[in-house]
Image 1 (cartoon, helix red, strand yellow):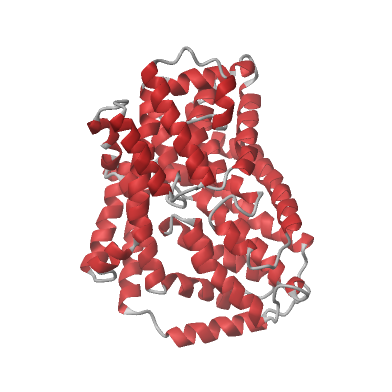
Image 2 (cartoon, rainbow, N blue to C red):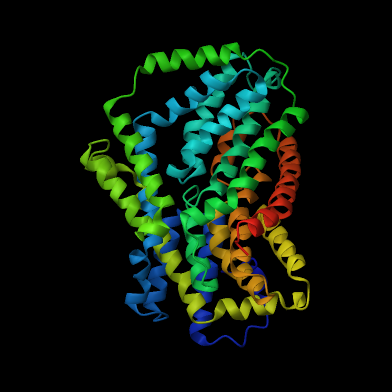
Length: 457
């Protein structure tokens, strides 16, 4: 919940903080800076922070370990295991080639096919690094190679266009679903604790569906105009997809079980307002079914290091964020930093906060670190300015994903796509900035109208 980089804390009038508040804030600031700079792995930074809080007596042991009992943490953990099942069975790659084989009739429809595959996989792979970098990018790279488009002189044949489309639709797909990015459930946790807003899976999706699908329709078309591919015949891509699908054969037993379980979990998430079962336990039921059906074995679960890594560092981050909210630090800092906005019209405040929240991501290399550091304070500021709680919580949540547009380091999948060598850094930043403006126009222009129509505010 730090609202600005730690170095600027020196300039804030913070004597109003108690010793307890100051110690917890100092540890949290140091942890967030470590998450951004990454001198060591994220888990190491967070474990050190837990130890310091305990050794200094800043918080009691039960409080320090309370993050591991948080249902949001277990939802993220479980979602990573779904990701393991999707990739290990090859189901995610099959979906990608199936979309290409069915829909790639032109370069633009090929781009939409890649976006559609990402969109289908996003609810079950809560990491754009795993989904974009691990599933979509290899397919994109293979398709570009099938056209003879390689980094360098032939990049503009079609590779540049496909790489940009794949990247910009990956984080957009993450924004559409509550389970599309690891930090989205954390956002829901913050929204409930600070604004008493319950962001269910269905409520998140109902708010994102119109602006999200508009973005997925408009951004590939704009990129097609800006970096028009020289190749127009997409037959090689369809042929590659047919060959890959033929090589894989019909759905395996594991894929059939996984498909049935994924559909069941999706239905459970959508219908949670009626049956009352928490999203986490719907996901755990799906994971139990995956294990019983032997789609994954227990050893596979133990080997999924990303899930265990997330469990270790995510729980303490949630705990520290909760504590800073409970002991009043969020309220104090948000009041100090955003007092100049007092008296501004509600929508002006919201637009200013969302825009600054988006572009401060130039200084972040992790969407989770950005959310943890800034989301609670920006949300508190919006609420203090009179923005309706749901209207404040959702746009900041969506732009916790959409802010990845601008740089080649802003999210885990960005270096994967960028390092392929199809797009120069200057072009990457230029197109990213332009698309960030498009995102602001769609999500903060059309978005509020849609949210008003469906009764979100």
